Length: 155
Image (cartoon, one colour):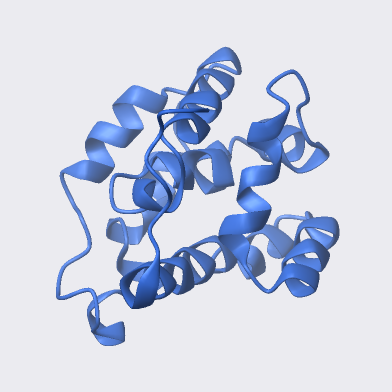
């Protein structure tokens, strides 16, 4: 990972990390309603206090696929994975250049149209200044998180 830029730091980096935290937790109730309670993931976040730090763990061993990732794949919900979230253009600065690069092939390997979904997400970036929490609610990151209607089709 040498040569990669350091993840975002300072007040702007902390705000972006907070927004990433909100983003990954925004789907927990939905996933629970579908029968998956990500207790291990939530426990790791509670222990570290930082969803971005927890999201980096799967990138450290590209040969290992977590139980949570497998469950999301089986549910057709990889668009709600930290691997996908780390590749969203507005969150990439939280990670080294190499970390999202580890995640995208994992998504593709599991028949998730990562490139297509990232292109769709990039067409609808969050709006508003970085320091405005109202401009960046988790529910508005991607219109209806690429909408449940779109998710229910071939994803």
